Length: 401
Image 1: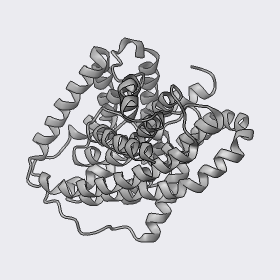
Image 2 (image 1 turned 120 degrees about the horizontal axis):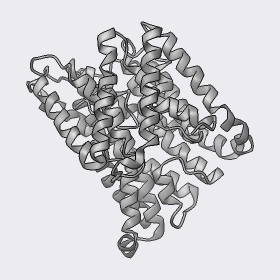
Image 3 (image 1 turned 180 degrees about the horizontal axis):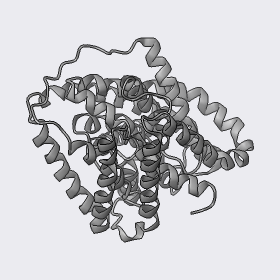
């Protein structure tokens, strides 16, 4: 039990750091723990090392809502959710947005437990059929996403162009410095599409007074949104080649973000946390690694699955409390010049991109930003830009890359 508690404490601290600092992922923290495992094992046992990695992943899924909401900087896993979250911040409802995401994460953690058992015991025998359907499933959801838009023609064009950009990004990823691992280029790609392209058009004026007036969603709506998000997160957590960004894309085809932003934020919060737990199920049931944390886990002594489930649940509780606590800091942004803050964030993210991915990352950032501003001028939603992630996965599913 000492190893579990110590591992959870280490994981919560590292996951909080990665969640609050844009561009840093829980995968990075797992890599740091793996590279320093000699020193870690000197203090705690091997079980604590694995527990800390998974706890960091779970914690990250809660805390990354804070910079996404307050600063409009998307995490690679939650790129689309930054759109309604930051919009609520500009309406003076930042604390509510962060709380909704945290509540969604808590719902996702709770509902994913019975799904974990079903996936773990029943789905391995069907995995061959499931793998074949990934591309077709994504094509269906992409079609729904495009046909529901204000202009299907423009949405299709943006979806395809962003997809081509995604293919080029991954195809030539070797040109990047990749200081944070192979997924480093997701940062400039998704930051340009969903972050800078939004911040460039921040209106002049001060940030509104941030006031928390309670959660607008009813308990029933929270349950529905959380359930939908958990199912989406569970699906991509089990299927190969998919990520949280894919789950958010699926949810974007179900929710009308402009009118159902609160529900979408709750759903994506649930999806991100559920994805972490179901990726663990795939790791134990199929020996497949769905993210960098699972890869790191496979390099050391693997504890019983019940140990990591318990640790993940404890980490989720701690991360929920920390996120709720930090949501109250929204009032610090009241009265700040919104446009100056936006350009400060753009400068900060650009420096981060260069530091982590080099000149090639800056090229991707510029191209992604140019693609991301197209929806603004043709008056459509920015959601079709998720083609940058979906099209590469579809091509991978059909053996084209």
